[in-house]
Image (cartoon, rainbow, N blue to C red):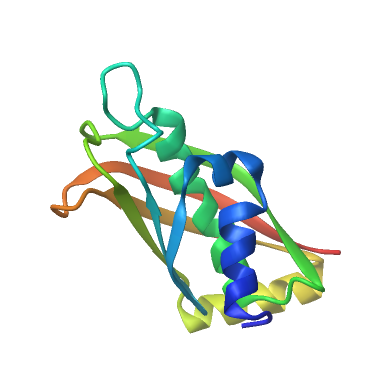
Length: 147
């Protein structure tokens, strides 16, 4: 990892005002693996389930958090190019997402970005409730770019 874990936690949870207000928490921040939690409390919609925008935020943030745990933020920065979210069932409690980039994918992204100034990476994720039920599925296309 290119920066201290507590700095990665602070950037993940607090750098973006909307994310900070949502109460999103980083439970795992490791090279190639992050687990994030979005609380129901404070993020309910008009019927008392988790607001769709909060679920979207939970699906989108792992791409940046994985970047921070796996790449050199002094040389590169991430952007999101495309995001799709499929809602499967109402989210009636806190929701978590686990995101992974295998070591080979990290090397591929790094090498491609060094060669071309940018590299795409895809994350297909499942957002899950406390019972392990999938409440939403996401597909995010991110890009790492050279500064």
